[in-house]
Image (tube, rainbow, N blue to C red):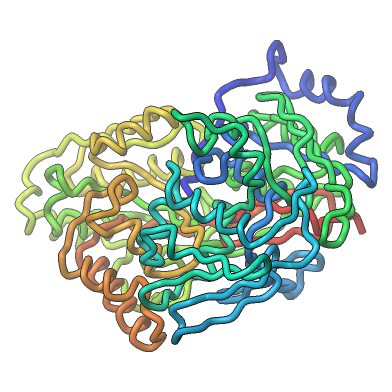
Amino acid sequence: MFGDHSRRGLLKWGGLGGGAALARSLLPRAAKAQDVSTLTVGWASDIDTLDPAQFKSDGAYIVQSNIYDTPLAWATEPVPGQPGIFLSKPAKFLGRVGENWAYENDGKTLVVKIRPGLKFPSGKPVDASAVKYLFDRGLQSPGYMRLIFPTLLAITHPDQFEVRDDTTFAINMPAPSAMLLDVLALSNNALLDPDLVKAHATPEDPWASDWLKRNAAGLGPYRLVSNEPSVEVVLEATPDYWGPAPYFKRVVAKYTPNEADRILLLKRKAIDMVIGPNSMSPKNLKSLETEPGLKVVSLPDTNCNFVSMNLRKPPFDNVKVRQAVNYAIPIQAIIPNVLYGYGEQMKSPVPSQTPGHDDLLSPYRYDIDKAKSLMQQSGFGKGLLPIKLAVRVGYEPHEQAAIWIQRELEKIGFQIRVEKETDATFRQLSSNGDHELSIESWQSWINDPVYHLYFNFHSRAVGTNKGFYANPVLDKLIDDNIREGDLIKRAASVKELQRILLDDAVWGLLWYDNFTRVMRSELLGLEKYWDSLERFEKMKFA
């Protein structure tokens, strides 16, 4: 939901020491990668839960996006010059469980017509009551949607979700919301079979969250048939699915935590594709561009990478220090030497692919003399400041960027010690506010500027506002515009919000990632959504 792409498993293939051993272990099954009815992929994730309201791992999200339908979906369009690759566009949607939709009551009510003839695997009809159950559950059960509905839609009570008849479902809001259709496209809003979920509820767990950790209960183009943690996950095409039958009748996702192993398996065609964010380092992506039989897909993305400065801890409570950090970041060296071109310089806290992004507002460029002057003005430029710079172990671009940043910050008065932390440790220290300086990654799964700004910078966004920034002027601007439907007013406010954040130097601006995937040359039908995670239903071999 909030796009932190550093969630990685720690388990490894038992007893397998190197890439050659791993490849040999898979070669007897390698024929599956050549079977036109099977797509075999490598990933470095596991499924933490199949509850769409609560998942955290990339593996869980990818699986749920393929086994559960949502009311609406983001539409995609072909990418010019890249045959077989498709990309979401802002404000473009298509029907899924909801066949069509219309607004009433001056935009305060959305009416969704349920696609006729849909049935759950149990045989129970998919009707408006089933859709209401998924929304009721999201609003009242632990998880993401309990936060999303009140914040983005001003929905606080289940009575605001209305069943008009078996095929008609309505959402009643106190005012129009700019993000309503995006919320209906989120995979957190996955259709579940109410009877099946209720059958496994208990007084202590009324929404059956424990049962849903390991059990699926929905309708989608694929169904989960096997989930062997740290080994593989198997999906099979859903019989008699309402939409076009997928080309691949079977998808096998093999747990492959080592990047060198993933590369070897690709070269040996034991897998057809590597999936999931941050699955390949930029250096290896560059080397695979000319590998026979493979192709590298690279598209601009909304994932932000930034230096997080803890505004509750000196010296980063001083705006001059934060500005100095921005002038000291050697981003023009980091892009080619760390990212190998698979990324774009960040010029605003709003991603370049997000509506309202303005790349002309930032004054920051590498200028070490200006950075030194700002440190002197801050009062901290007279001696070395010992500071820890935290990065997650395993995400190579952050580890490498930390070295470049360390070198430059030491020129302006810092004594930097780079701390490499496991994902779990990094998360805990970040949430507790124990980091001074860290390199963070964030992607907003709703590609809306005010959504993005709320969760990263609003003082109420506890747990996601990594720098603990608090500015009542910014808070009010966000509150006034989070559901604003007047696009002209909203655009002016988004520009002002960017200006405030750049003046306050809340983030050390680094880069926006590219969406990159490596696959067999003949594999087509890859769709890049705002959440940057794969759906398999349109993939096929040429």
